[in-house]
Length: 524
Image (cartoon, rainbow, N blue to C red):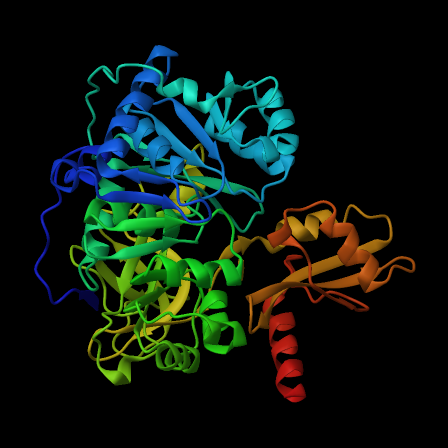
């Protein structure tokens, strides 16, 4: 059974991304497009358009050609929009980099993407510089100044007369974010201009945002959620976006209060804080009219608690990097019985549920793997035809690896994952990567890593370890923490006699997951 939107298809403009996102510049003029929350530094729509043109020109002057890759390794600041849209206007490809990445993570992404230039900040250079040198990146730009780098401001010192670049929105890539694979190495997700434009336009449909709204950019712009559904969507719709370089609850609440934020796109840990933290009562959040939540499942009760405490609507959505953002979004005005749903499929998009064993299409309220088809589905993974073929079938359906079902009204619910990625606060963590690292330690004989349910983070990486010699759980966690990005830290360890495995040698993670869930349930 194929599910589709009850709404008519929406026409997607056959243009480049920058032209679509900045289509209302003349109308909006001096209206603030972006505000750096902590400092109040403001960029109007006119200024943004001007600096995007200069960015594209500065790149062209440095020999940055159509199809070249620009790596952005900075926190959420207004310059992110200048860079992203400037690279797009120059016909380049944005590879957005997780600000928590270690040097080895950076080396993998820079090499795999073939990044030509890099933008970072002085505080990140201890990780970025050695990676850039190893990968032969031609020029490193920084926001500010640092030895051995070029000031980002120099890219904008020109007349803004960038050469016209012919862009085919259907085939030309504009973004190359990296998504973790079950093998442990992250994969470059190739996204075209049409992919991003489609998702941005279609995602507006269930819960519209307009020029009267103020949004907050607290979720990282390197992630597809922040990139498409916050940064680009906010500018496209004419809203004002207040950026936050890093999440701090007190600062977040103050910015929401001071800038009278009306729409917030969040993840479950922040919704949890808004629902339960005593600090919330010290701030006036009455301007907030709607909260969208995605990147990880949000419990039905938590959704209700947050909505009641803040007196605003709240809705959930579902999507992946490979579909350029969202594929399903629940309207904020959905019937009360649909709390906890990620909503119906978006317009122009098809979805179906299949049996994970047989591939047979399933009907209402039958659980299986969720598949998606639409103009926002990626063409594939960079340099990885095998992974692409495994994920997108011959008919163009993207296999999400997530288990869900749809009720008789076409509202979808996501309940589990086929794939074994751990979702820690919305970040993807590959168990195999951590297992491989653990096995390099001389004291460890065998290891398996699973997701352990956690109210704050959604899931935390938990390791089951077989020892050769004495090595405490605390020592194991510390040892791993010194070698991985913060979101990949192992936060729970259990010493065991053996790891359950199939005859093929594959770790039976599901057995360990069930044991852990039973153990947690018995403790409640």
